[in-house]
Image 1 (cartoon, rainbow, N blue to C red):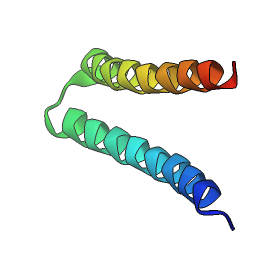
Image 2: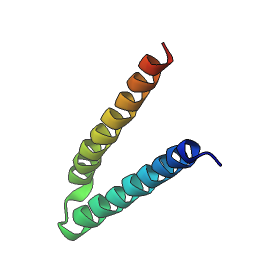
Image 3: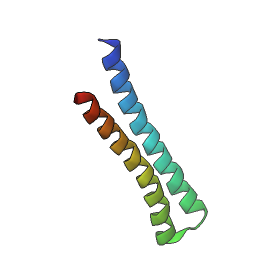
Length: 67
């Protein structure tokens, strides 16, 4: 296997694991702080916007490299 392909797959997989772990941390924080439904939604919205920014950055860079 080419090292570049391996690095690409490991980066994708490890970023997915990191995002999942961050979601667990936010859920645990909301549970322990008794944030309620609205507070939990706001916490996950903030996490989701960060993940969305990372995905958008990856798509834009990928599309610019393809040009």
